[in-house]
Length: 499
View (cartoon, helix red, strand yellow):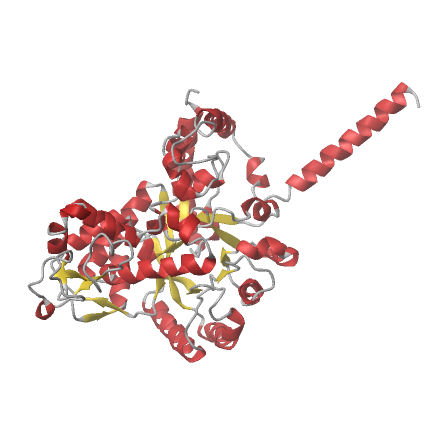
């Protein structure tokens, strides 16, 4: 073969190679956006990549006390202290995020702020099953909630040997009298906050199985839920959630509320208020927040019928607030979607008859299993018409389901901080839309979306989650227009940065 023939063969090979690479990359969900970057966006992208490369050596490539073998996508709770040192995180913090589409309302405000709210309310009391001392403090879970004045007691110290188990103590008094040997008031704060959150030792050590970590989740919610349901705290809590989200560049929120407990607690600490008061508060405080109606996977089909009916009633009364319906709870051990198929199919049919639209936004595939009942929830979620999939950890094991998600544009809600080993690159590279979300940020002290973006993105890219929200076309257009203005200003700032 002559030199010219060799050259032609190589040229043909290189052309086929370029075509194959192009065809492969064209399947990625971010391909179309990447091909339309403006010159300013390209410059900003180069700046961010250069900073990331620098910090891979200067920050992630050096030793840190208590953090063995650090890397940018490592377990969030272990790596958080290092993330906060990076210039890249400062940039991501300023980035307009668009929409937060998967977050649970009762885990949206930083634990220390929630404790502060509780300490400000005379009705909030604490009780423990035993005296709190050096031997019991690590294992004792307190009960904290509002009580009526008739239930107040003279007891004032949960660390005194004379404390009678399960006696209510005003939380402010319990803090003031907390044993100095246990740290005094600051020790009280540290102990209470530890019951509100998940720490690295629990997440990656003592509770590093699905069953154990779910047990920890449930214990934290059991402690914080009665505090947040107290109406004087509920509004302050909701306001803080909204303000911290806006500060992080979030323009629109779809928040999951569990309605299995269908009341709030009035200021007197006793009267149960109808849950519709929550809708009234949301409507009054922030037009950019919608509610995803949740119930537990543990309920019966008869109970589900009742909840679906009530969801429709709320949709009629607050048509602009109800974004969708979902089930929450550990998939591995609780009722699978197939067992609820009959009430869900009736729900779909009734909506068609009444001209109402309440889309499903199911948690599904939040499991490490393959072919288990939790994994099989993916099939039912898709057959029932879910618009998004919460977690979808096991979706990457199902080529046909990934194909359907790509064709129907069913977005996967990827929860970075709470599930660091999520197969995000596989999902995105199959052309499936992905929305980053924070899930239960209070548990990890990761408010907003900046930590999630930091761990999941390697360059400045526009992931406009409003595309996959349940907003109407007009409202979606308004959110996207507002985001575009902020995005342009952000990109210009980044593009002008010095390395």
